[in-house]
Image 1 (cartoon, rainbow, N blue to C red):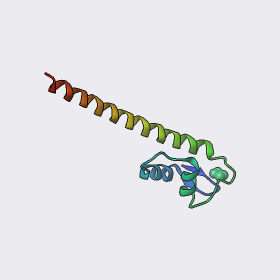
Image 2: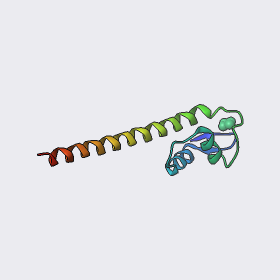
Image 3: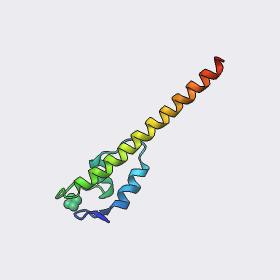
Amino acid sequence: MYICLCNPFSDTDVHEHLQTLEGPARVQDVYRTCSGGEDFNCGTCACILKKMVDTHNNTRTITRLTQNMTRGLDACETADTENL
Ligand code: FES
């Protein structure tokens, strides 16, 4: 599905770009990359693009927090075992 009609790109383009990022995404940066270096024109696509970027960033944050919690729990279990 096309997201932007002024500088055409699709939701697939956005998802593929977001998957290449190691850090959090910014709407303006994602727009520029997916549009081939252009800036917003009419801005009609900004809301859906922001929702996609927010979802990506929130998912990334939850994944990192879960990994940190798992590491912390693993460290606790190791510490308990050593004290027995
Ligand atoms: S639809 Fe994306 S800038 Fe106009």
